[in-house]
Length: 250
Length: 266
Image (cartoon, rainbow over all chains, first blue to last red; front, side):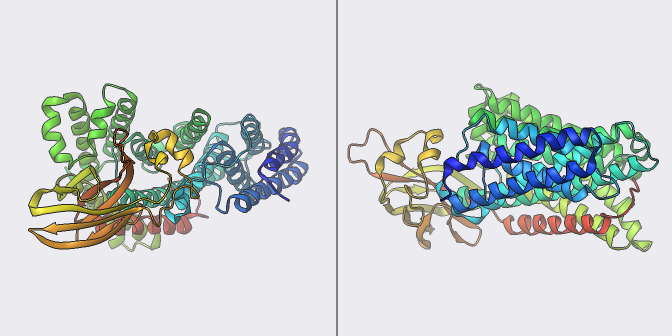
């Protein structure tokens, strides 16, 4: 029977696939990288399923649940764009997932606390959408940063930029959806939808940080490095803050 | 003139200003000297807080005013951009993407206005601690009365510090469907609200919301009588705010699908 002690094997299995996938990706062995990445993704998805089965809720927060969730979202974006016209450079998303899993394995593989509010749909949706947004925004950052590398084909930069922009907008929408649920949660709990706390200030800061990439004057938009940095920054910062938060509060 | 106000450079400058202010506020939230002042912003309507803070806590007051100024510049820029640039686009035969772009900007402006209005309109009382029979007179002839506090679980749970309590207040240990408080709300002596307030299930009547935000037991109380922590808020624009917010998210999804395959036209 499945129990909490067995949860550790899912990231271990995923890491066993993602580490060689990273190496193969960097060696431009795209096919083998994709096969191993798919195996790793299946292991991670099984881990998510196991969390749902054991806790009777989707993954929420806490190092184990949040990091495995982030790895899945980044893995899914990498997998779906892998065969498109502008995939990420080989080994990038696999390398990032490997790093997340290595960090995850330094924490006990245990479920997040079963806080009494976690049976309400609004906190659940808030955490789900927040984690999905962080994963997607981090993927957008990878696409933007990839435009700064040496590209062989003409037009590849524009396509990578377009992928970055699409995922930045998708991540921003998911982030806003999460904030909407969080505000409703706050309204039901504390009687108002906004609180003057660090969490609310940082969430608003992050949302505003996503806006400049969509509001560049033509003269600035013509500068690819600036565009890439402005598009890539929100995901990098939010991802780093999420990881640091998990590490500090573990 | 309107073209200058509608400029994307003004957008970037106001966004940068807001980001800097929010970061400054975030840092102050970690600073022991400012943390209690920041927290006190949640206890009452912001306009009431600001009048006191201008003399008592000028640093936080100046921070808040700067944040509002940056938001006001962003709002004016947004309005000018909508009139000067987005509306003419639609008039010249817009297409779905441009209509959604216009709608999302208008909705964002409505959200900003709704948020600003909550700073000055209505009233707000937070952290009202009452036990059985406790009464709290409020402004405009309102009065909150606690008929009975119902708590069926281990009293020790309510004595814990906030940080520790999250780990032990589990679904099994704390029954949020039973623990609560039967309360009455009066307006000029007339009962307008009566019912059991639960955590995440406030009582509403018109623009008034009575929320049970927590439960407590005084450590010095030998009888260990449980009490409720309440918030009473009168906020007329909540529906408008959330309706605009939801529509904005729908518009953004629409924009996403309308522009997903389109080659970058930045």
